[in-house]
Image (tube, rainbow, N blue to C red):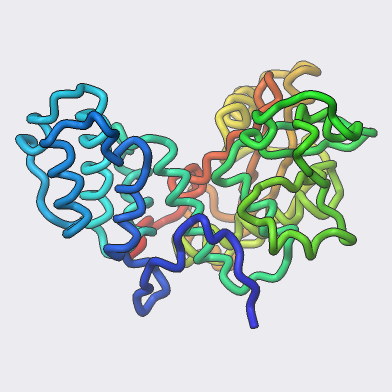
Length: 336
């Protein structure tokens, strides 16, 4: 029996089509109506209360501009405009995967980054269903949650940025102190010895990951990348972590975050990286397509490189959309 994880993403509220894609349900839409930005406060207007109640009864009902315009509070109007636009995107496409692909290929517009991260969260839960490798599951959290990177005892440790933000005083251990966590918090670096505790705490995002070159976590992230590409585009790839950036010919590369894209652009233009830029590189991968025929002719036979880097403030913000839009695929079609 497969172990469950990430209940907070709402995957259990969704249906699946014949191809395994996630189909939006009324129950899933109603979760958004419970968000504090949309749940009417005690002093909410009658118009806002009526709109909220009508959507609880029928979360797919048509909402017009007039329905929102009569809400007197400007912040509430903006929240509703963003939410209804996002809901309409979800309903316009056959699956959540297709919604995400459309948003990243055609432009997300005013869609809040939080909503995009939530889509990635639930899509990955679907793509990794049945996965029993905790290192892969923890590494995949990087696709939808920012990470804070710190060097500790010559290891590069990644911890969840939002978890770290709940700082307090009187830390209990050097690791807790280093990451700025309150004494009441418990955070462990994932190891073989504590891996089984992940299942009961997967929604707490309180396990750190050792991202030191040559260790299991970087290879696990490569497996996540391969799973993501296969799920979103039905293309099989192998993703191999490399330990050296020297003598790498970046004929085609994809930055997995904004900082990595800047570094890749510099290398592609023949610029020398200074020590500060080199120190921000977390990972380098070589991607190989199992079917070379899917690759555009101009780079066929050339290796594809993926770069991962932290920002100057040591935060990693992975952009999984770059894998959907940035690979040299010959016939790029939206997933359905």
